[in-house]
Structures are given as structure tokens and as C-alpha cells.
Image (cartoon, rainbow, N blue to C red; front, side, top):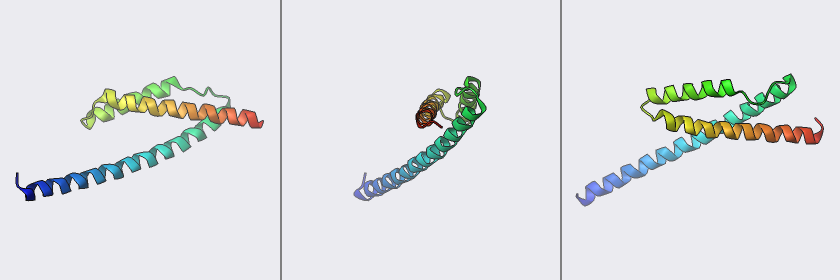
Length: 106
């Protein structure tokens, strides 16, 4: 490998890493938007007297995520595992929000 080829490959690697960094920041922005909506839904569930947990909805979402991942050439089990963590975070945030509201007497 020539020094020029090596230098060009290093630059390409650097550009690809920068793109991944941008994608990662976008993922975080999307997760933040999702969490905002999950908290809104949690407040509405509380007002409506609905159960905080929606196992059927979660199962449906995980199925959709798995199918979308497979269609895009990703491992559906890994994609579902990522979303299981996202759902756990949403439930934890909703629970914390509900406890704050109850402590505040809302």
C-alpha cells in the first residue's frame, strides 16, 4: 500500500466516522422526541384512568420493528432488543413522571 493510498483511506475513514457521529446525534434527537411523546401519552393514560403498560402495543411495535429491520438487511433480534431498551426507558420515565405528579398532589 502506498503512502498516498493509505492517506486517502485514512481520510475516507475519518469522513465515515464523522457521518456516523452525525447519525448518532440524530438518533439521540429522535429518542428525545420519542420520550417527549411517551411522557405525553403517560399523562393522558393517567387522566383517562388507563393502564400505564400496554403489552399488546409493545408486542405490536416490536413486531413492526423486527419486520422493518429484516427488510433493511438488519438482524431483527438486535433491532427488537434496542427497542426493548427504548420501551423500558419510556416506562421508567412515565413511572417517574407519575410519581412526581402524585408527590406534587396533581
